[in-house]
Structures are given as structure tokens and as C-alpha cells.
Amino acid sequence: GITRHYRFNIRLQSVTRLCHSRSIVTVNGQFPGPRIIAREGDRVVVKVVNHVQNNVTIHWHGVRQLRSGWADGPAYVTQCPIQTGQSYTYNFTITGQRGTLFWHAHISWLRVTVHGPLIILPKQGVPYPFAKPYKEVPIIFGEWFNTDTEAIISQALQTGGGPNVSDAYTINGLPGPLYNCSAKDTFKLSVKPGKTYLLRLINAALNDELFFSIANHTLTVVEADATYIKPFQAETILITPGQTTNVLLRTKPHFPSASFLMAARPYVTGPGTFDNSTTAGILEYQLNNSSSSSSSTIKLPLFRPTLPPLNDTSFAANFTKRFHSLANAKFPANVPQKVDKRFFFTVGLGTSPCPNNQTCQGPNGTKFAASVNNISFIQPTTALLQAHFFGQSNGVYTTDFPNNPPFPFNYTGTPPNNTLVSNGTKLVVLPFNTSVELVMQDTSIIGAESHPLHLHGFNFYVVGQGFGNYDPKKDPSKFNLVDPVERNTVGVPSGGWVAIRFFADNPGVWFMHCHLEVHTSWGLKMAWVVLDGKLPKQKLPPPPSDLPKC
Ligand code: C2O
Image (tube, rainbow, N blue to C red; front, side, top):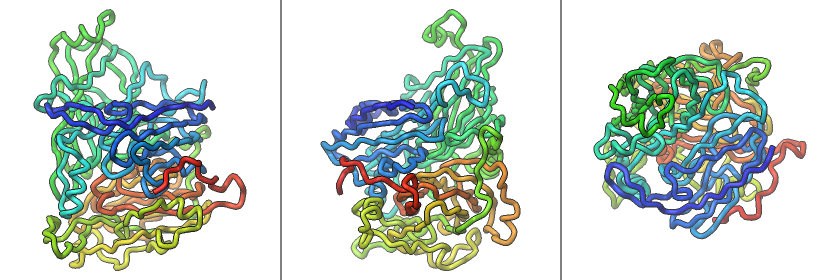
């Protein structure tokens, strides 16, 4: 591989959407941010220079970061933030991965505007396991807020209520024609007839899972979270925040006498308010000799896709079940067949008490909270990885994260009367190369809800999923240990459970959290410590000299 150098200048930029201008935090003035392109095996070196008042970190979402945990990026987990006027150089090698990932800020809600595609091509000369596309197009979904998101979340955390929701969803930063004052901000994909396009779909939205569809076109899903899968066809894609999905779009053989809308809108399960608007872009066919600008002046009928109902959980469950890893000679599935350590985590919402001198807007006058095994994660004031590496964990974190909820109940039935969470910075310690099985169970406390759980530093295999309460006696016999999908973000079904397996072969401290940013803010997060192995190549090297200090 070669080394690819990038420079990210974090700076403010005035951006107008929906007729509202805002000064937003960007990378190099771009929204969405610049593309990073590398090949499998390359080293990526990104110097991030912070020119804004906010503290910043950048996370390379889905990059395995084998023995490079110092470059992972979540604030107060692997690093202290990059402060105003300071810089930090992220330096990592992409090993054994190719496909679509993305990068995003990993502190507070800054990732709403600080994100961009991270595209990993196969090694030079190595083909895709599917037909070579004529063109490749990143499509990154996001959210636009007319007001400052940092103010929204700090206000919500103070009052304990649900934060304001976004004003629009976006496709490559553009809300599209279904919003007021937005027709000119429409993503247009100009295509030729009879060609195959690879669409690299990325959900970078803060708080919403999304359905996506293109009118009158079927998509072939070929990749999930930068792992190849057994191809399958779908009219509609469901993509959670944190997930990336590659699809092939085969265009119509002849120039059609129509244009086609592509559209995305949310899949919503939980309680509270949400933005139920639709973002759209246009798929337009280019006549052979015409440029895209003249083709867009031809007025053709516009077909719209039909998207599933907002809370279509059976669509969600059936869609997820269709993902299977290739599991062939070239791309074998390395599913742990035997398990060293089993974990059972409940994930869900809860409440925390309202401080004496305050009025709170959460359920019954409390504050909203969220937890894993009833522990709502408290962010430390120094970085966990540093504390671990230098043996200074005392007063920073404890290693008594409970393996089971403190009081078992009917997770998907009537919620318990006591909905209070407890707080802590508790971690799980795993010896190097432990084979882990983790069952994550959604709870109905406050309301059942789908939670896209993201694990840093690993891909995991999704070996099972179901509705209701996980049954340790019956359910494991149905696990797929042959060709389960391998990914870094999985939806814990609303009112159900999911089982994953992975080898803890990457020393460091690894964050795991719901990728709905509001739930992360409420505490639906925890971290794993993976210890060094015996061999030199199983140890985490010391931090780079410019690692920020708290
Ligand atoms: Cu994409 Cu911890 O995040």
C-alpha cells in the first residue's frame, strides 16, 4: 500500500438550506465533508487542525484500527478532544477491508455537519465480486437543522426532555424538492441507459433510520458496512445511522420518457416527536450527446417511489434477515464457533431524577436517560485509553460493568415501576482474542424502540435476531454460524433482541453505543477494554506524541 495524506481544516462556513442561513462547523468549508479515498492496505494520514471554538475529534467509522486505537477518535474514550488552535494527526492502515465507510466528528452533536464518505477500493487489480460498475456514486444521508444543534442538545440534557428534531433530511447535503424553499437544492444523478451504477449509501443522519427507494428501479444489495454480502434485490433499502450499504443500480436499457424520484424518509419506532418529512433527489437519464444541464431542461413526468409506513417493523425485520456474508473460498466467514464469554445486555430508555431546583421535561417530571444493563454511561474527563495504557484507571473508570441487567423482568412486556437508571463509567475487560457472544435485548421501559448499536474496533457477525424476550434455552439452536452478515452496526429490533459474535483480537479501549445520537447523549453507551496479547504484534503501541491532552 501507499500513504495518503489529507488535511482537515475544521472551520465555520455559512450554509443556506430551506432559506435559513447558518454558520456551521465544517471540514474545509464543505458540507457534507470531503471524500477520503484509499485502497485496502494503504496508510491514511489525516492532519486535523481545529480553527473553531468547539472541541473536535474525528472518528473513522468502521475502520478496524488494528493496533491503532489512538486514531479511533471518540472523545474521552480513545483521546482527549482537539482544542481550539490545536491539531492532531490521525494515522492508520486499512487492513483486510474494502468498501464504503464514513468519517464523522465524535463529540457532542457535531457530526451533524462534520462527516463525509470514506471509500476503500480493493487492492490494485483486484476486482469486485460483482459486475464492474460503469460509475460509482456516494450517496450520504444527513439531517439539516435550522438552528444550532449544540444548543439543542445542551438544552435537552439540562431540562431532561426530548431535543428538537431536524427540519429536513438531506441527500448529499441537499433536502430536495419536497421541502419549501428547496427545489434548487436537489441532488441529481445523471445516468446513461443500460449501465450499472454502484451507489455507496451512507446514513450519517443523527437520529433517524431511513427507508430509501428509487421509483421504478430495483436495487441489488452487494455490500454492508464494507463487507461483501450475497447479492439480493430490493425495491426499498433500510439503513440505520452508522450503517453503509452498497447497491447496484441497473439503468433502463433505453432512454425512458420519464424522470424518477429517489426518496428517503424515517423508520420510527420509539416514543416522542420526530421529523417525518421526505428528502428526495432526481434520477435523470442523459441522452447520448447531450450534457446533463440540457437534459435537465427537458420536462418529463416524474415518478415517485412508494416507501413503507413509518413504523413498519416487520419490513425492518425481514429486510435485515436477507443479509448474508459471502462465506466462500475467497471471502470466508470467520464466525466464532465456540464462545469463551457470553454477555447479555439490555438496551433501552429509562429515567433519572430531576435536580431539586429544576423543572424537568422528561417522563413524569423526570429526565430522559438511556442505559445498557441499567448503567447510564458517564463520560470521563480524561481519555479511557490513556488511563488504561498508562495504568491510571483509578478514579477514571471501573471494570465492573454488569454482565446481565441488575433485576430481570419481562423486557418486552409491562415495564417495571422503577424506571430509574444508575450512572457510572464501567467497562468490561476481555483478555486478548476472547471469543465473545453478546445478546442485546431491547426493553419496553418508556417504550420499545429500535437501537442501531455500533461497536468500534471490530466487525461482528450477526448470528441471530428475534422478537420478544431472548430465550437462552431455545434461541441459540437457531443461530446462523455459517454465513451470518459481518458488520459494525446492527439494529436491535424494537421489542426484540439480536445476537452477535466476534473475536476480541484488537487491543485497546473500544466504545459501543447506540448510533441514534440522542440515545448516546442520554447514556446508551459503554466500552470494552481488550488487553494486549503476548506477542509483540498483539500489543497496542504507545500513543503518538501529538495526542491531545485534556
Ligand atoms: Cu459512527 Cu462511535 O460512531
